[in-house]
Length: 456
Image (tube, rainbow, N blue to C red; front, side, top):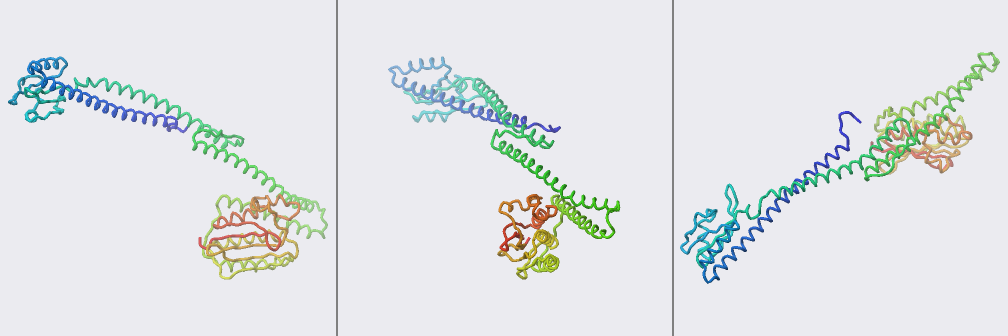
């Protein structure tokens, strides 16, 4: 674990706990408010019904005064205060508790025959006021809201309990979810460390949420790719070692013969020619290894400028014509004039030289080589190198630019170099922003098509 950083498990747990606390707090506050409002509405409705019943009882009684006195006593017993207003609008019992909640405006409204139904509030309490006209004047029922709905402590206690339960549930869910998410991530980290240590036979079970499962699949794919790449590297190194050993063995053998005086004086020139050819072959192999290393490390610079591709390939053909004629190979050109592209002329020439060098090694006498240049619409320039040699099979085309694959396949039947030529071609073309593909030539051999963007 990196020092100074908290774990994902703790972060998820803390986040879920905070969300749970906030949700419980908001829910509790809303619930308390709703419960309070509901209790207040119920209390008010109860007082409304009681006031209507009192007025009806007084108005329908044979002795309204006696009924009114009896009703007042009954209401006082249940903490409901009553203010009596006579026909002249005077309060008969002004010193009764909560009488200040009845205003002159209320009395005027009652005298006009209309009921009064309000909630009066001051700095200390809220009072429910329900007034009704009667046969003796008016009667006003007063009740403290706290007395009507009871203390608020019970509501807050229930809210606190709900808050604690919600927090506990949120913490438990966060714990379970955190473990479920973190466990495959820890497995993934373990496999990644194992891959970094050189292990290639490790895999991660595909489980957990979609994103975690996708990460596991990606790590498993990386493990397979690394194993495949390293296997190819080993095969490549074995192949290169074998190819390097051959010229080295020849040079070493002839050098020992010369040192021991075994070579006759008349054969010295021939032996020197063989040693020179083998050393040049070795030099080409080492140069190819350096080139492929630089390309894979991204150390090859490309300077793309407007280039007359037609002129470049024409000069290339002129340079190769005599060399190919010495091997009885016919060089043909199919070059459309004035074809331009934004590219690096030196690197493009290196690509075409590499393809021609491959062709020169494997073509039999009398076979043709074709250099072609044309445009493909207004976006690409096509440069083709075609030949009439042994060509490629269909299964060779997808792996033609893989290091040493074709070299190993045709080691015993076709002369070859290091097996890196086509891999270098492919990487150079990619560095130029283009594409190269292998195919079958109408001349009967192989076709290599380079596609370059007209404008970079």
